[in-house]
Image (tube, rainbow, N blue to C red; front, side):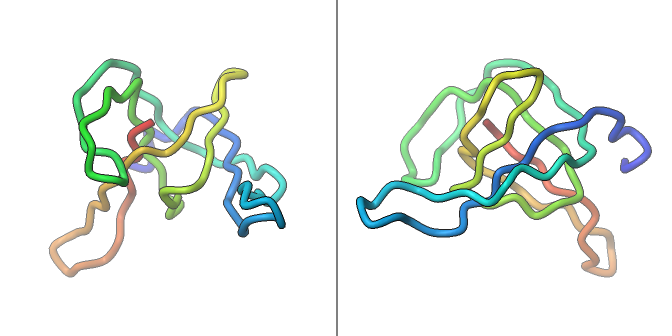
Length: 97
């Protein structure tokens, strides 16, 4: 699957909150991915049904509070799912935005 990661996305990892409770992010890191646009009904991190705008396939372990920037548009991570091989070794993560 990693052979198909031929697109680049900027990953902003959440590092904490400031004094006002707003999220603070690390500087952007450019990583390889595969983006597939399309609407899908999913459950977000609070368990509410939401409409996803697309899915990123990537080998980095992006978290629920992180942000991704692709083609000049920023996305909030709504949910993710890990894919492992038969030995339980992590292969890639599907990230819904």
